[in-house]
Image (tube, rainbow, N blue to C red; front, top):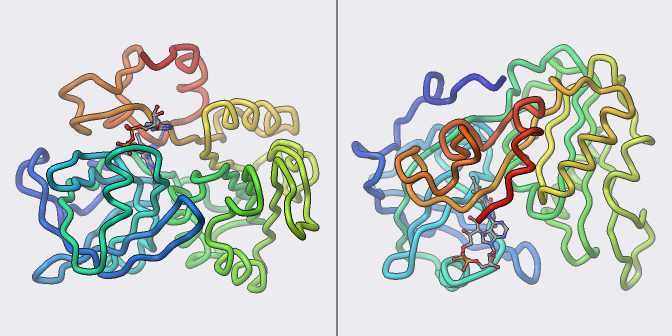
Length: 287
Ligand SMILES: Cc1cc2nc3c(=O)[nH]c(=O)nc-3n(C[C@H](O)[C@H](O)[C@H](O)COP(=O)(O)OP(=O)(O)OC[C@H]3O[C@@H](n4cnc5c(N)ncnc54)[C@H](O)[C@@H]3O)c2cc1C
């Protein structure tokens, strides 16, 4: 089970009250794809924002609304608070229109984290689908900064089309520095020469020792279910599989019950869960 982040995570930038957003400004905007963008945020006075890989913040676009977004930056550089967001509706659309200097409220960090410390010593398979690479990126930064503590590390990434691939330059850099990166797209387009097919088709082919390997998985729920199944077929133990869940949430601290799934609150017990805990609950559909 992931250890509760609340017990471990320094909350230097957290507000006094978890429901009160702190004012932040946009320091930089980066377009990642046709519908996805990265915001780098900063506060005045400038302060570190300590977080654990996999945690999220509630981002408030003033006058529009507040949404949960995972932190996608480097936990070893806490001065830069970074989020990568796909535009899907009213709040994320308004967020995308923010320019350098624009204001945003931040509550957090919230939730559990990828168990990057608990899985040292063995192989590590990181499986991302689409925007799911954003919540996994801090785990990759951490693992690559402590590379010697892990066995083989592989990144397996699937997107709908080549145009949906995020962090392309960084993936190339990671690959050049020795991280095996396997990418596949559901539908090839343009001059794509790589693998075509859903991400689960890569799992039987990637190099890792399933007997001891741990897996970190993030993507659409259906992708995580099939990925967990493929990993287990390959021999990965279910208790070594960790996923990150998304549910509609409002308070992020277990008050409102919007994200409740059976007895579990995705916001405070998750979003990162061990597969053995989440599998039975995935039968509960969001209302
Ligand atoms: C813990 C957590 C971490 C998240 N991290 C990220 C992240 O790093 N980057 C990112 O882009 N998004 C992330 N999300 C999803 C993000 O919160 C939603 O996309 C956002 O709330 C949509 O708000 P909206 O007002 O723009 O759209 P809405 O008007 O609320 O929704 C527009 C459309 O998107 C669909 N939608 C809404 N929420 C989700 C969701 N959670 N998953 C899939 N479809 C949804 C709705 O059903 C609707 O069809 C995360 C969600 C959670 C719970």
